[in-house]
View 1 (cartoon, rainbow, N blue to C red):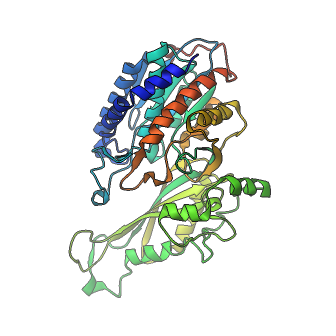
View 2 (view 1 turned 60 degrees about the horizontal axis):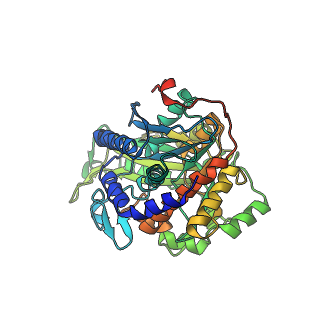
Length: 475
């Protein structure tokens, strides 16, 4: 099928595509805040209507225990390969609001960058594929392949409903390859394909003293402060070599050959580039590894927040009743989230002073994922990038976690192409998140090329019937 007319359509309609993306970004679909559930539902409803409008004939908004899942499909025929495109419409909170140049949910174009929460992670990137499909349908009336869209509203909280959804609906989700655009390139016009993702686990730790705040004058010096106890315990999470100090934490960590490490050194970012992206001067962490290796093939424990006592303006002379910490683990093959959670709980029990009580909750487990760089679904992505960006993409590991990548591998048995269009300077998970409009345009071109090239993918099950109405979607 020709792609030149679809490419011209995409170029001619770039301004409209951008306006539609801005509308999409105005929904504060924050999955971590229960009071935003209605906003997430409104966002899912808008997304479903938009998919219908661009030419997807079968669209469903599936209710889950959390935010809805949006599913859409267009079936050309049994003899054509099927591509499953995943994205997430949920976003992180905008706080701290005062650090944004513009309000996080009022998309603003400054120069060649669109500023808004979700612009790069992940509304902007998933929208790239919708616009590629629209460009084909508007010019050719059909697609080179069967296409299925799967957009969830809980990725930023560990995709608690998605695995169950995929397991219950394997038949309806059958495909020959999956495409996920929720990663980044290594720089402008330097495309990259991620071939490995770290896993993850989140934990909440609470230290409890009295059943109420105490006057620091009456009790200071005789009652152990939960905030002090928490800080002392947190200080024992790492040793002086930058290693996680939890006993047994590294037992299952897979080692890598010198050949793999040399491949990473040739293709990955330098220590200087990583520190530059972070805006810091000096590195920290486990000795014997580069910054790139520490953030990809080595596990990590991060303290995400510490909270205790008076948070308002002015002082308050108290010993707080409670202190809490939110932590996250990044895990590597062959670490198992459940085992890491057990080791962490045991270590906290050992560290907890007798004068206070501790409570641990672990959640959002994610298994690491490794992808086959030589699969035709991945080589098609390489060619698609070359045609749109003019440069061959490099293969890099990612320090982040995309839960659904491992789910698609295990439950659907299909390869996953991680085709990112973000940039290191997009400020994802931070104030002033933005999307480079050049990447938005070239991303649509790349997706158009990928759909054309995917027509030659080997089929897992050529005789299947992928019509949506023949399957039950449980939740």
